[in-house]
Image (cartoon, rainbow, N blue to C red):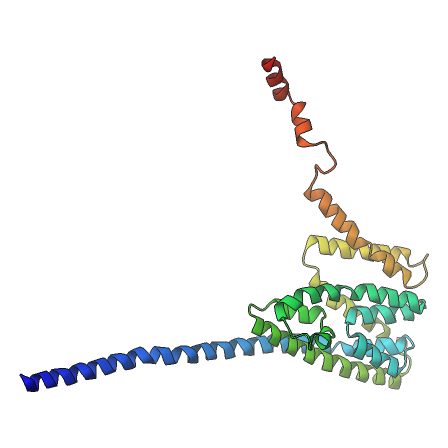
Length: 286
């Protein structure tokens, strides 16, 4: 009996040890699986961010060429990319200058285009939740592409990775290709003879087209084009761009009217008093 008890006890101890080891294995495996899943997710974010950064960063060539054709020096061109770093505003500025516009009017148009980045910043500040010390530096990278990549992520970690990789890749490539484009344009000479003066508007349209996803956005762009082209012969260069910005509030106003068609009509209770049913009820009450 004692030997069997000992055997039974040892067997029980062995069985319990195996059970404990089996229970312990999933516990050790869970962190491994979580770490592996995180690494895979991080690689996917980095891949997407690099794709956006490289694709858009290469268009700095066109800006360098366009800026040189507008009469800006190499230093001025590179300073715009380093300090302004928002393609739409940069193209709008040099485009207005190339058309003979007033520098202040051209700068005003570029400024209004750049105000959208302030709204991106309000949204990204919650998604990224960066320390206060890093926010001034990060603000330089708040543009269309970094906002799109960041807001597409589901976690804060992925959002921070997407923002950092997109911003860094795009900033480095944009400034490098701007320099190369400006230097190349100086070596070529007259960019208009080569048809390179159309590179800026072409890239601007290529950047804008994928953003026009809804009917309201397409209508805004269409009205802005009509206003800009229609007023170009009668207004100084750069002013039609400012007037074209009125397309956005006009479309928003029209959307609001369609969403609330009874906004200008009498109060529903007033209308109800005039219906036959309301009249009949009042007569029966008398």
